[in-house]
Image 1 (tube, one colour):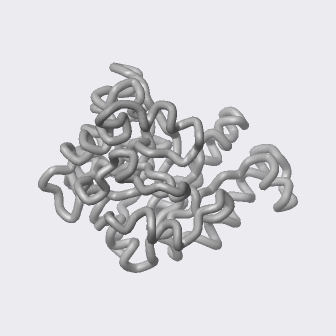
Image 2: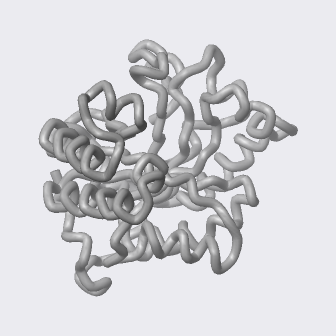
Length: 257
C-alpha cells in the first residue's frame, strides 16, 4: 500500500497530483479489497457496545474500531454528525480518530456532506481538505444541490492537496428520488456528467468520485447515471445493516470499471 504522509506536513512536502487520492485508494483496494467501513457511533450503537453516550464512550468506540480495522480495509468513513452532537469534545475525538488513522496509513473518507456557496464552501473545504487542518481527511463527501459549480472550492483544493471528494449523486434514501431523478437529463445524471468532466484525462482516475447507493431495485443507468463514463471512484453506502448485499453490488455496479 502506498505510504500515506502525516496530516501536518507543509504543503511543499506533499506533491500535488490530480490523481493522488485515486492512486492511494486503488492501491488500498488492490491490497485489502474494496470495503470502506463506516464509523457511525449513534446512541443506539454505543448502547449496544456497552458504552456511554458521551465523549468518553465515543473515544472508546473509536479505539476499538481502529484496532479492528486499521490496516485491514481499504478505507474508514467516520460520520461527522455523530461526533458533532457531542460538541467540541466530540469534534476533538474525531480529530484524533483522523490523525490516528493517518498514522496507521489507513485512508479516511469524512462523511460530512458539506455544501454551500462562495466563502462558506471555501471554509468547509479548508476544514476538511487543507494540509494541516485538524479535520483533514483523505476525502470528504459533498452535496451538489446548490449547484455543482458551488463545489469548485472543494474540488480545486482537493486537486492541489492530493485529496478527493465524493459528490452525492444517486442516494438510496427514498426521499432522494424526488430531487435526483427529476428532469431529462436527470439531476443525478447532470451531476455525474459534471464529475466526469472534472476527471477527464486523469489516471488511474480523477479526484471527483460519486456517492451511488448500493441498495435499490433499478440500475444507476435507469436514473441517467453513466458509471462507465465517470473515470472516478464510487462510494456505495448501504452494504450490511442497511440491507445491501454483495449480489446487489455486483448487479448495480456491473457497468463500473
